[in-house]
Length: 355
Ligand SMILES: C[S@@+](CC[C@H](N)C(=O)[O-])C[C@H]1O[C@@H](n2cnc3c(N)ncnc32)[C@H](O)[C@@H]1O
Image 1 (cartoon, rainbow, N blue to C red):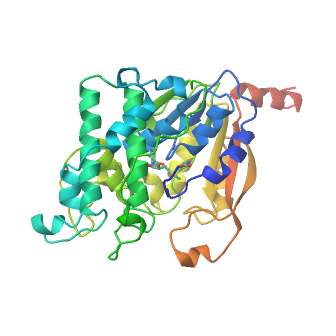
Image 2: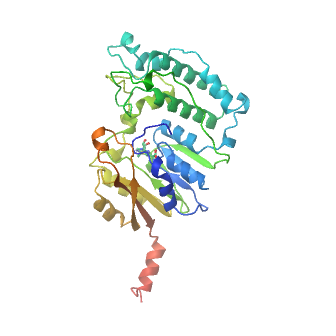
Image 3: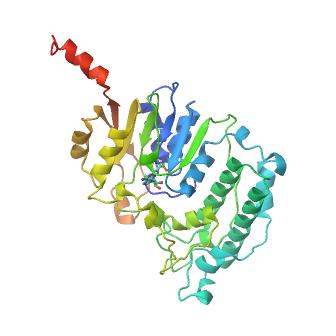
């Protein structure tokens, strides 16, 4: 993906989708889609997919991950590659990213922010403005716009002067940050994908009795809306009030219940009890707020529970100390097959309870 996203399942996406079995008449619902790595693996295996995330930037990344070449013909623009080339040829045009997130911020405020060099920030501004113009003029479709925004975020990630998230910038420039920002067209599969994309809170997402739903909630206190604030701003192309050393945009409105130790277990059980889906897959970690035994105990009320351990090798960890642990088996997927009222009546009947 080119995105160092906390909790990304890119390395284990196929293993997770395999737990869902063969695609059927229902949809594969990736309800906390992040970068869309799991939705993309499901789409590649023939599932019709639904993507949901509370952050518009994450939904755009996920749309970019699942699209097939036929979904984004860029008819008015002479094709995808021509469109990317046009954006790469633009000269810098200083705007909000330049004013707030490059060293130019020192002339407008008290802090010199070093997320991007001045030249790269001005080019990101120019590209964002151009994508907006195309979208406003209906030269590109919604899916084409999301793909270009996903590409823009990916190219920004490659030159961002950060150590993994936008929670802070580095004081000294990394060699990657000094390279010129450039969009790279991604490989699009030759199929079309049947996908729905929703920006919203997971508790508002409807599922049907035919669906398989995959939940990959945050499991630590790290709030994605704060850690990836700059991707949100690039995606929105807006000019929010930003503050502090890091130039954080207002993020509390998107604060996630799953990030609070005191609320996580309640949120997880409410979520699973509330779904209509025929099969639920819940990713969690032994490093998360809720202990595995507590979670499994709480979820047995919802149906038949199976725990699958997922091997994670060299996955993204936020700091060097954490990486020193090497290979681990701390990620697991809890599979829940909800018990329907009719099933329990049937088994009780067979057991002679109603005889
Ligand atoms: C662990 S990440 C998902 C990673 C994803 N599976 C991947 O491979 O990239 C969790 C995601 O949940 C989203 N999120 C957090 N709380 C949410 C909520 N209440 N409703 C919807 N999405 C939420 C975050 O924005 C973040 O993108």
